[in-house]
Image (cartoon, rainbow, N blue to C red; front, side, top):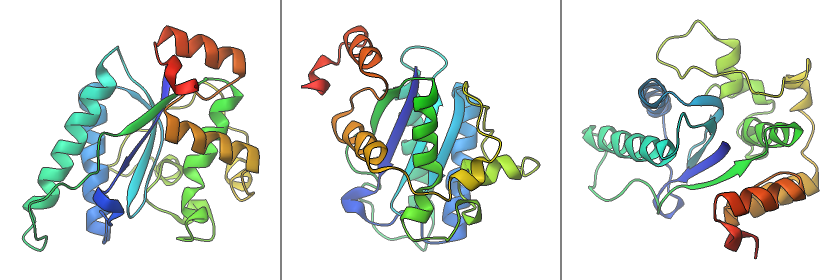
Length: 204
């Protein structure tokens, strides 16, 4: 399955305050991708949280990847002298939900890659350096995660499409899945997937 994964800073405090902070996380994410070999379809790193869209290589890999990523990043974050305190960096366990790998996946990719615009960080999504959209453009840069092509081809004018606001229905649907950890897709697929993954309670 494709999963949309979200991790937030403890008490929604900023995790990333400088370019060095963002670059350090991207490097750690690149190592996690190399170590666990998921198909990373999209990501976006924001000051207080980050999003990943990926397909784990095998069952159980998602928890292992996220455990390694958050633990390693937290240790590196705390190792810098300019950062004080020894408390946790991240809030409770990461959130995730499976996504249907058809046109519904484009909804989620658009939600993730256009997030910096909605957050008021930039005027256009391509201007935000710390995301898969930027990574696809700058393929030659090292120390950044390798982004795979999604199973559903991106539209030819994907960057321009991200300039348009996400519809209220799509936004509400994805936010609901983030809060409930329920599958995102067509209703029949959602029901079938919830039963297969034994997460029917997320639909109630």
